[in-house]
Length: 382
Image 1 (cartoon, rainbow, N blue to C red):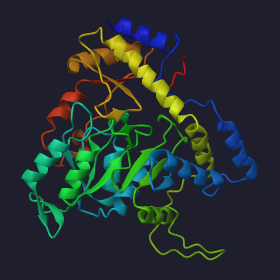
Image 2: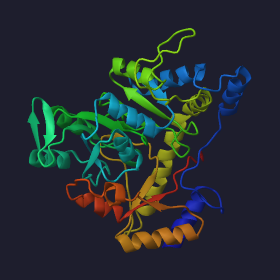
Image 3: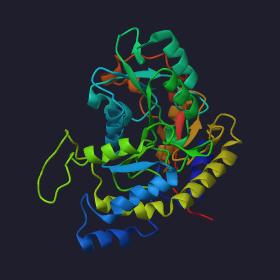
Image 4: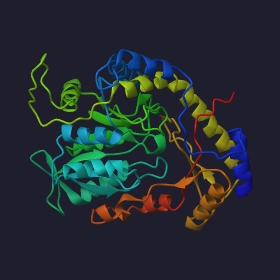
């Protein structure tokens, strides 16, 4: 069975060589725009491509304001600071996530609280959040507190795992009811829509990543999406060292951050964005090919996009029967020229976060024993 899978993937990608998990593709104006940066000497944090990239992502996603950053992690850090997360606050999030989510919380000195995910989305479960809040939280003076720790619960950070949208509208309603700020971790979901609305636009602020393995890349980079335009303007100021504009004087009015994306990275992003829809459609085609192939394998389930969603299928997912089958699958595929990987180590199992409160994480642990990511690069094969 596993040999059939590796043969199919090699055939799908048209090669007998090693098939990576997700490789970037440069088929457009990347070199042209990079050369323009070099020729004009605008390679650092000022230049026309920075402004253009922000404007074009805003138009594509429907965000009211967009601010580019050095990385998705920086964007998450800034997003939580902007909505008022402070030291010793608590942030509700999922343990099934990349560590950047929890690193950003930790930079502030806040504490993650890990709530279970839904099997049908792989992302934070609205029902699990509601149940946990009803049992463990209370509202005092329009502020949410954890009755177990007496800490303020300031924010909720769901992630659209592997590009698949969570039930973000339900989470937004719960956050509103409990006076909690919603910050979307949309790092992996550029090009994904939930009920025809782009992910990252349901709360006041969200974060996207443009790392080298994302659907489109700026090499390294991230972005903040805002539905609150004034908050977006503040973010632009804070991420550029909080420098007050002046022709020669160096005056700063806040503690600022050097989170500025260089023009040369934004140039790469502009070129990549020109092919985003082409890439997403190609990735969706690849997902359909996988879905058809794995339909004939009763012991392996291909994960399809959730209801009411249009996923970018950033990383394709199959679910094995159990932990032993998962490990056998990983060993065989990686030994036979096909890169696969399990989901990230659950955050609550890492030494830094073992002390954090959880709700038991039943679905999370079930998925961690079964998820395998399979090659998901853009193929552009007709």
